[in-house]
Image (cartoon, rainbow, N blue to C red):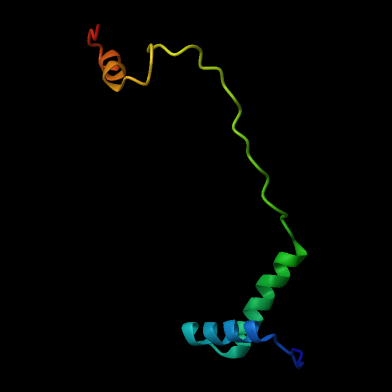
Length: 83
């Protein structure tokens, strides 16, 4: 075990104190858990997630004359003779 003095920025200290109240743990436990988590992330950075792009697919021509006429589109989809 190592003893040391840390100077925390005000925002970090406030977050640590808040977590201490929420979790009901000692300040030491909160700081150790935060350091473990952060240092593991720094040691093994996974990097930014890769961007997934959906490939384009040709669906062919529209089987319904116009999708602007909702009544006609529904009639064709339901198998009714609209015309």
